[in-house]
Structures are given as C-alpha cells and as structure tokens.
Image 1: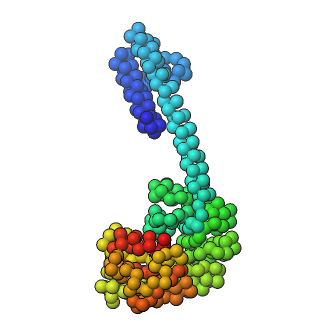
Image 2 (image 1 turned 180 degrees about the horizontal axis):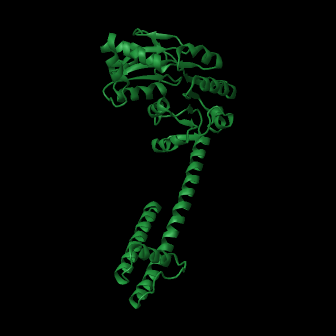
Length: 333
C-alpha cells in the first residue's frame, strides 16, 4: 500500500478507537465527555496519570481491552508516520539525484531561465519535441510543484548565479532563453551566460522595446518583446484576418491537416544539388516550398522551380504533418 494511504488509514483507525473508548467510558461508567476522553487518551498513551474516578469491574475489563487494541494501533500509527516521513524524504532525495543525472548527461540542450507565465508557456511548446532537451532554472520555491507536475527538468536557484548555470550545463548547451521578471535581471543573465559560453545562442525577453539595444550589447542573439508582438498581432488580426487565420492554422500544435516546418538539409541528402522541379517534393509529398534559407542567412522567398537544394540550406515547407516528416527524413538523410 502507498505510504500516504497507509498513514491516512492508520489515523482514521486511531480516531475510531479514540471515539470508541470515549463512548465506552461514558456508557459503562456514566462519566461526562471530558472525563471519558481524558481517560481514553491517557490509557492509549500509557502515561499512567491515574484514573479520574474509581473504575468499576466492567470498566477495568474495558480498559484492558482498550490498552490491548489501542496501544497496538498507536504503535502501528507511529510506524506509519515514520515510514511516511522516511520514504517521502528518500523519494525526494532520489528524485533530485535522478534529475541531476539527467541534466548532467544533456548535450546541445536549451536552458530556460524563469518559469513564470511566459516561461511556462514557452516550455510547454518546446518540451517533448524530437531532439529538443531543455532545463529550467527557477528561484521561486512555490513553482517547484508546478514544474514537477509539468514534468520538466529543473534546478531551483538564482539563474544569474554562475554555479547554477554551470549545473544546468551551460558550457555544453546550445541555447539559453532569458525570461526572468525584470529587464535588469535578464541583461545581467545575458552577460553572465555569454561569458560562460561564447558560442551559446541567447534569446532574451525585453519588457520595453527601448531596452533591446542593451540586450544586444550584452550579447543576446535575439531580443523579443511580448508586448510589441502582441500589439502587432492584434493589429494584423484587424487588418489581415484571413492571413492571420492561416498562420494560426499552420502553427497550431493540435492541427494535423496543415503545418509549417523548417527542415535543415544535410550534406548526405539525396536531394543535394537537385532542382526543385526534379526533386519530387511537390509531386510525392504534396508540399509547398515557401522559402529556402541559405547558410549565410539570406532568404529566398517563393523559390523558382529551377532553384537547387544545397547542403546547409533550411527548407521552409507547408503541408500535412506526415508528408513533412517524410521530407525531413530525405533532407536529413
């Protein structure tokens, strides 16, 4: 039986014995509630303070039965409480060690600093993605149960502390996302993270658009202002409702009919140096190639049918999820 259920059952049995003992003395000896309860408690606790009143022959027999059954149950409850505390502590220690071991084995993962409103939504969208591991750094103790319920790998501590960042594997990490409460904390975090790992890709949240330059100077690769994005999104929904509806459809996780994906092209792919018209992407997979991002960062929008697929490119395609997965296998082979 689970130790928690075990403890609850034991406490209920003890309460039952206490009520039975109190009721028994009231019926047998005719005592009031307080005297009967007092007698029951000192009997079960075996403290030996003495009877509050003289006990009749029937009362003595009842007291012996109460001691026989009650003391045994009290010892049982004490053992259940010790088991509950010890097992709970052991589970916490072992659980923390398992988390630390998993974090220690991670490579090319992402570190999310902050598990507030934005951090949690961000993690829910990233967690569970194929070949995408992440670790959360959060200083608020109240959010620990939330992170455990969400099933994320986490460390409790200040994200701007170098030791905590090293524990999170920043030196072997691929990226870091700074979503702490204030811009000042995020700027300091970006500075610290950049010093620990010069090659880290850092994305930071900025509360105000006029602070973006400070983040970029501190070493951030991307700076995002949720308020600016939200305002622009609302404006686009008013001005271009059809386009925004299409984008919502393409990016919705639950949608299986149509999705938009970016797929990197491996040097070993069979489609290297093949023109789009000869690649069979449209014919075999019924996919639309919206753009191709070149290794130098330039973007070819609506590439012509004579455009060649080259190693290091990133193909942006729209279509059904299953077809996108098949294309990903071919381009990444």
